[in-house]
Image (cartoon, rainbow, N blue to C red; front, side):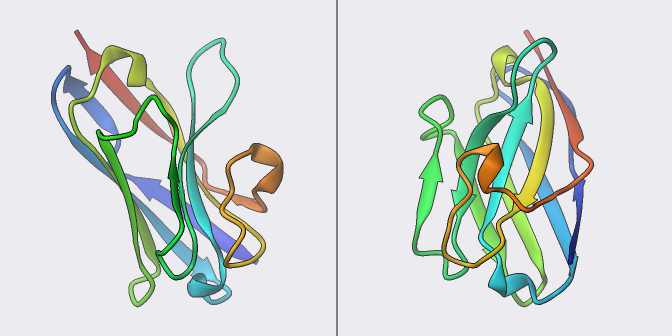
Length: 125
């Protein structure tokens, strides 16, 4: 079992930056590939970024490529999402997620075994 707790969301102006953190507890964090998803009001939950246990396989949604950076610190049991040059369309609840194993980077909700409670990110124009 893995418990995930996100933090770092908030209100920011367009062009600004935020860094989301996802603190994991439970089974060994390094055994799980991690991902970030987001869900805007009235829209389906969508993939944002994902990373495997070794940090060698990283995927990004086209909409955030070049602006967002996913990373992880296995010693600290924490995953991060650095978000730069934020746009109003990035406004959503952001969820941290973990896969069942370390190498299957979750890019769809069905690939996610564990979920955090979410943190709100609001970007004003």
